[in-house]
Image 1 (cartoon, rainbow, N blue to C red):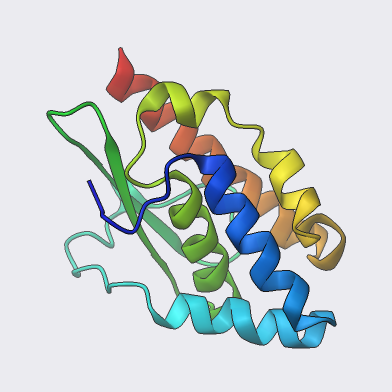
Image 2 (cartoon, one colour):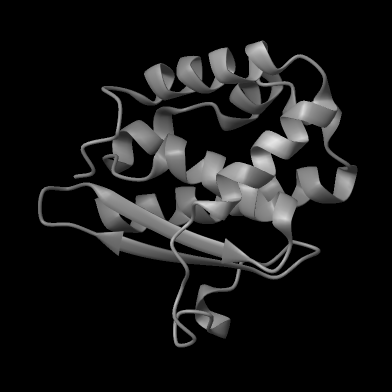
Length: 145
């Protein structure tokens, strides 16, 4: 499990929320989200496959799911759009390295609303974010079965 993963998803959400708070307006927050995306590890060409593609996103989004023997699930992702890469980074920060039960118990829409993302994103990006979380939840369910 990644040592950077906080004790709970709620801890990670609180940390993200505090980071967003100090930024003030949404122009600064967008830049920060884009910066978060720059830190994503790139996926290989083989991982940018149709099987890893997330449906329901306007831009290209790939998500790789890796279940581990300790019961945790790691996610890696990438996109061809800068802001979406940043959204992937936020989603991965919340969900990657967690057990399926914790992932499935977490209220992602409420979390994104608490971060202010719901009001700041276009409907298309909000739908894409929901598609990413839906895929993570399905993969977590499969890993926990």
